Length: 398
Image 1 (cartoon, one colour):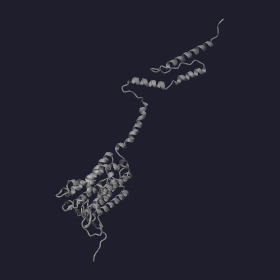
Image 2 (cartoon, rainbow, N blue to C red; image 1 turned 45 degrees about the vertical axis):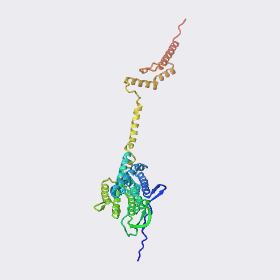
Image 3 (cartoon, helix red, strand yellow; image 1 turned 90 degrees about the vertical axis):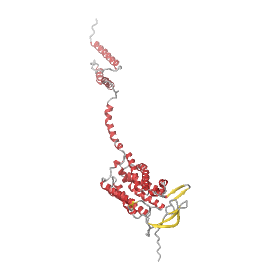
Image 4 (cartoon, rainbow, N blue to C red; image 1 turned 120 degrees about the vertical axis):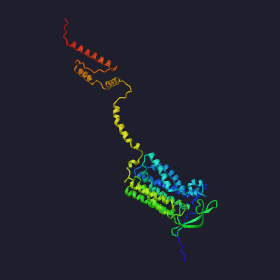
């Protein structure tokens, strides 16, 4: 009896296309698509938590380059024989990041350093940023695994499972035939049927993504604890998937190095999850630097001091007190007319009698134009008084 399995799915025939002399690599396209998706989701989540829209993109200018460098360094450190061992690809191949080979642990670690620098420059707490971007990161990892599918890499052991992945030989432009030829095209010759570990990790990452969104809405997690949940959840899936892989990797005591890394990072994430504060940050702490938060206080202080400052006239430093006092008296004499003298003069005119002399407070230095007006007023009053006295005396002439 012959059993035909129809559920096997094939690998793509190639992982690179050429637009003239420019190679378009599927791996690079999916990495870029994952980064864009993470930024879009992170930006919306940051705004929903009380932050300013667009800040995520500013921080990404630091985090993404650091993350790419860290991911490549981790890959080279854990798979150094492929590049620097006997018969390795050489140092030049170590720089060709577009050919694939990024370690998520190094990407998260060094990317976190870049994010810390950017958050410090803007006065934003790093744990809050991590909580906002965590779901987007694990979604980006899921998208990036499609690049491994096109490169025919990161697959597991041979299997007879109905969902096995067909791996074909590929021929590169130089005529070299191998299943790991990144620039080659499929020859149609089946090499093996393997566990699609890239697909397992993709599905696991999507599950973690959905779980993070649910838990964050249900419990309002903050202070970096959601990021710790992402790390712990990813480590569980990665540890199990590593047990199914059979590709070239560095081993310690017969165990793949990524299994050790997953174990230790998981423990660290759980410890942080337990020790970190509960609840979520105050939205006011996500708006920017502390200097900006102090601006309203400085405005209130200026408003409090302004009435006192406007009440006192401006003086030149070093002016003697006597001169300052004289200036104040002159200002009062000019701005405030002698209402009492004017009222008495008007009353005298109305009653047609002598106006009594009224003492006016003398100023240290009276205005020159006031003196003539005062003398003329006195002479007129004296003339009017003499005329009235002459009219009252009887006529004694013979």
